Length: 167
Image 1 (cartoon, rainbow, N blue to C red):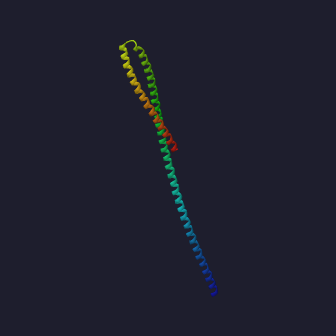
Image 2: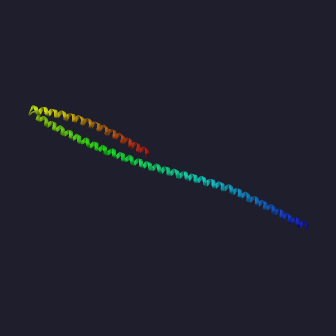
Image 3: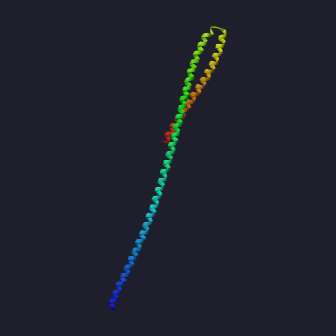
């Protein structure tokens, strides 16, 4: 019986040791699992932060694109307005040029009548000087319009270059 107890005790001790080893192995696996779980949670947080940053970046880029579109539409509208004003001024310059031509023709006609009488001559000379003053003023206006047209062309070129840079 003593041998049997010793055998039983040995078996019991072996079972206890095996159970302790199994318990330690389980604890080690739990620690390993906890480390892996922590790593996975950390990676998940990092992915979430990256996803949020990417989403924020996409939203920022979308807002910038929208602002650029709005800015571009405004610039296009402004350019169209400038072109329309330029066309209007060119039309006005053409009308003034035609008016000048008409005034020149009138002046020539008046010169023909100068030979009729001295009174008419004086009146025609006064009218001629008035017309010439108008012509000079209109030429000055034309010159100013041409300079303004050149400025508009330069602004248009700068706007085009700026739009190309933005693209």
